[in-house]
Image 1 (spheres, rainbow, N blue to C red):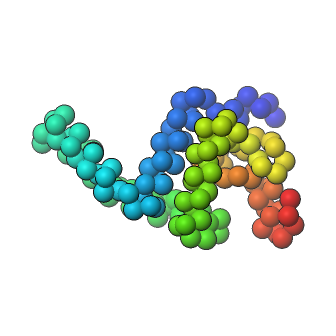
Image 2 (image 1 turned 135 degrees about the horizontal axis):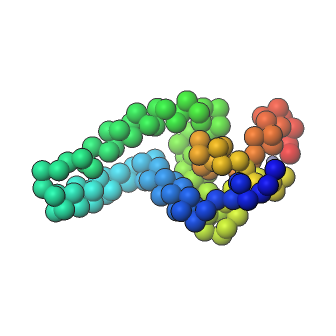
Length: 133
Ligand SMILES: [Zn+2]
């Protein structure tokens, strides 16, 4: 499998970083600040246009949707926060998207569902089967 297929573009890394940063803010209870900023921005940009304001409400649905996938991977929000922090660090250091166990690129399709994944699916399975990779 050609590695280039799995290589994240700068835009994809940026999008993932934003996703992780936002998720982090939600988990750490820092949403109010973000919502304030969004409100101020949208009000000053176009008063009456509230299309960007209720994004956090849409997020509630997204969250539930995401949890369908992340169930079993993350035990609690604190752990998820740590994973997100680690993922952001990997994004900054350029090691993001590589399996920590076998060093192979983690498929993009997996990163899109679990952006903070450290392990590829095979290594994750091994880990869950109790075989430390
Ligand atoms: Zn692996």
